[in-house]
Amino acid sequence: MSAEENLEQWINLTTLLRKIEATIEDALPTDLSLQDFQVLAVLGAAEHGRLRMSSLAHRVGLTKSGITRAVARLVERGLVCRRSCPKDQRATYAVITEKGAALRCRAVDVTADPLQENFFAALSPNDLRSFRRVMEALEDGLSESGACTSWD
Image (cartoon, one colour):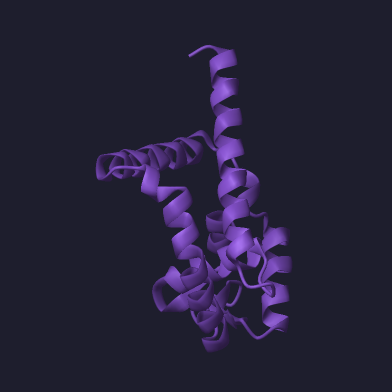
């Protein structure tokens, strides 16, 4: 593709993402920001509801300092706690609390229909499989290229 075609696809992708995020944000409880929901969603899906801070930063797309601030806000609200790694005292885990898990569940419930109606309903099962493959290929490409190293 040409540089202009690449630019057009990038604009289309970012515009679509903003529309999807706005749909989710509009459905969220007023006490939960989109970023907070993303952190809780990722933690809630992780094994034992915990991730190393560096892994969480990468999964959410934040810098180390950005995830530190985001987790600090959630810790203050009792939605997340920090735990030291028993095997490596230098590593810190973010762990979703029961209160955080309950809020995550409520947010998942209220965002499910808007996501389905405004995004997933437009895709066939084959489209969804293709979409997953494209997303994985893009993620792999970014990882292999060394892009986004500020997140590591």
